[in-house]
Length: 244
Image (tube, rainbow, N blue to C red):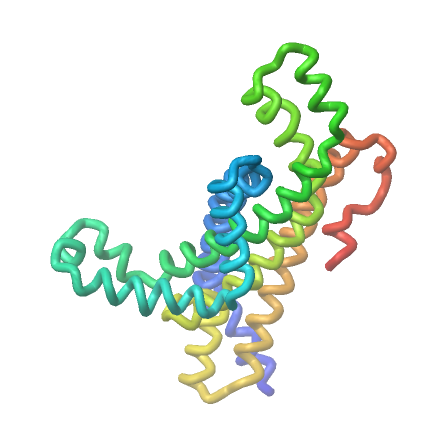
């Protein structure tokens, strides 16, 4: 193992790190936003939305994320490539880029996992808080917007933070569909130089550094939110921070 070669790898991985961060941020933001309607449908008293959401969550959680990435990239991507209207449209440069298929797969996966976590948070909202909202004459919409969802998010925040960190590590699957993220670039360097340990070790260090950085950031968000939601938890160590 060459130390000088190992150190020289990090400047080459700067752009790849930005790609990984962009993929993680976009998929986590949109995935967690989509998780809200998924969770609401999961607790709906109506049959159709409840079972539609349940089937969605079961299918996504029951299949490997790599399979979902392949289905979108090699399946949907090839299907769109055969459509002349799509190939001549202004969105074709995006549709032929593996980054957006990875983004779609990660977003869908995050929506399913975070939606199920948020469902547990919704079911954990104290009944008395909902009854208090009704006694004040709040409509069903206002009860959900002002009481149920904010309280559920605070309850589920530690688990949502852990899921978001797992999503960061799942972005490595994007390298399997030509995305030059951290792992994709490390594999390219490995194939060009026939050096195995240095590129993979450098990629591992970057993932660990990103995980620690985002863990601290999420812990800073979680700690005041948990104190606000439950004063008895003041001073406790963040579950996200202690899990890594």
